[in-house]
Image 1 (cartoon, one colour):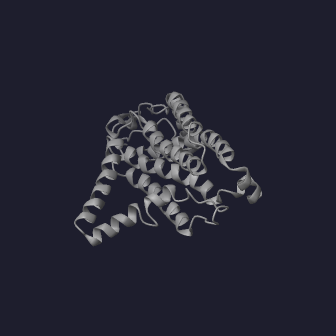
Image 2 (cartoon, one colour):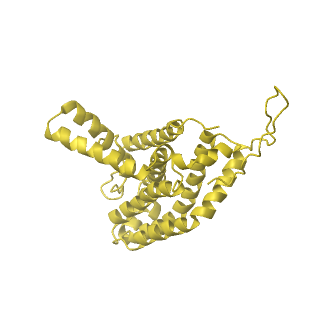
Image 3 (tube, rainbow, N blue to C red):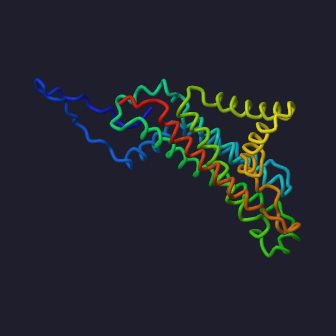
Length: 273
């Protein structure tokens, strides 16, 4: 439910006169600020739970560098997806009848709600990654730290970028479903399941073109998997390996696609105003 006040009733003009509104449309900043406050008020307990679970998952992970990298990253992008569902819980398209009373258009309201949720996601990630970063540093062998010249030289810089792009991509992708469809979690699972199923079917039936397209989108060097976890396992000080340039291209491309999906999904339902 929106914190924006319902627009006051329109005053009827005289015969043949159009109705006139009595309230000015609030600014984007005002709508965003109220959405931030609304989410904090109605989803505060969920935010605390998500941060607690993410922190515990990282603290309880095995003490190896690979597990520290992968668990911290997984906690981030899982949090992004689950949080998107939390932001829109109880806000399915058919339940947004209050849009008819808002002093702003439905599409703008939906996009600003996504943006407000993203702001709170960044705040939660800051807490979870503080725990994860501390655990990462304690997972490194002293000899590797000494050889690298410091803890920040062990893990490639692109891994730290991946910690941001992965949760933002999952958050925006799930938000695109949440804005447009009634059961976003179900549709997300069905979409991923159908894609993986088609990939296996194409491999089994040797459908070359279909297999090539699905492999490129899901598991290829520029696929979704590469974009989400492509930097895990690279340790420059051990073997001199760094994540390839293609990871950065994949991460930025999928992040842009997810953002575009949110914009397009906001157009699915015609504005009720």
